[in-house]
Image (tube, rainbow, N blue to C red; front, side, top):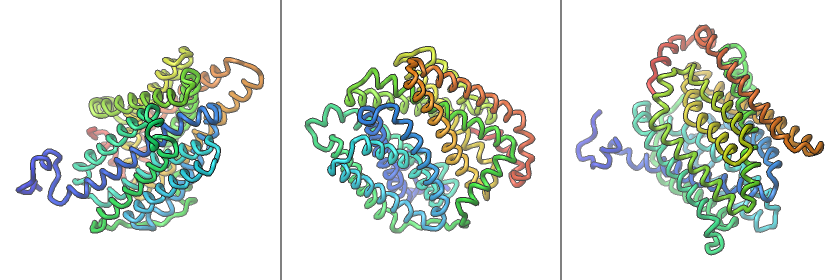
Length: 452
């Protein structure tokens, strides 16, 4: 279908057809607002929790966060097909607004600040993980495949802009909080509540006349989702080794990220200075990720192909862990964390999504939920318990260099992850013949020809 006559140059540049402008704007604005609020929440929470609760306690927050991810994914599997997609997104936006109002009330009621910032971090994770998942389910129901291919990159760009603006707001907070009240902690909580209320109204008004295509709905319990996902991963060799690799990498992530926070917190002891540093770190990470994704990701994956691309993240984690182990300073901590996150955001996540397209449609949701929630829970909890035990024992025994132990284990975990991916590569072709993939046996040839 060609562009309709009379389409203005701006619509033609963004490849927007008649009737799509308003819908794309509303969907993009929702993603923009959530990304803006999420960045402010996460940067503010991390920066202030380290001074109020102590850096070692972040391990407890991460462990609780993994449980929260597990629970919300379970809730998602129960409700996503039981309610209208538009209503579900509307209510989720409204719930976020209420959550921030409640946190503002907690702050004014004199609740401990470490508790407020811990809760803010947990909420930021739901903004980052749960909301986009529901949002893109709605988007896939609104747009057909041809529209999605054409419009999703444009909608996603709104999220990138919101992310950058959120980092910019976080950078401005330390210098403006003494002169502008809404840059103070209580003001930021109220500001985020207002952002979600405005988003709710815009989404409600903008989506009133939108009709989404009906999809078949399968109602499953959490137990059925877990059982199917576990059976699939256990019985398909390639997925089994990939699951082991993911768990090891998540545990390594905890060790490297924790070391980054410990070292940076020692260098920047003032919360305001730390917030500026952490916002600049996130800005550099975000800009680098956008540039790599735009210019290199598709070329790297196309050159390596899917099964070899899975080696990038384990190698990055191995090099990052070694770098942090050798360089016991801020440069080492930042370099290690960047190696870990850049390989994850730019190569590993797109590769994993492409690999999951091998799973038949009727099982893909359950397998995806299992790998994105249950493996996240197990890997993160393993890392938190392991690092926490080493920190506790090191402090009790007066061993000053206990960080070398958990970083050494991170190196070992990365090596195990590389071994698992090498094993996955060996069974990759035979796994495509597994009966659980029987409806997608042609997937090998299709997937190997994918252009990224």
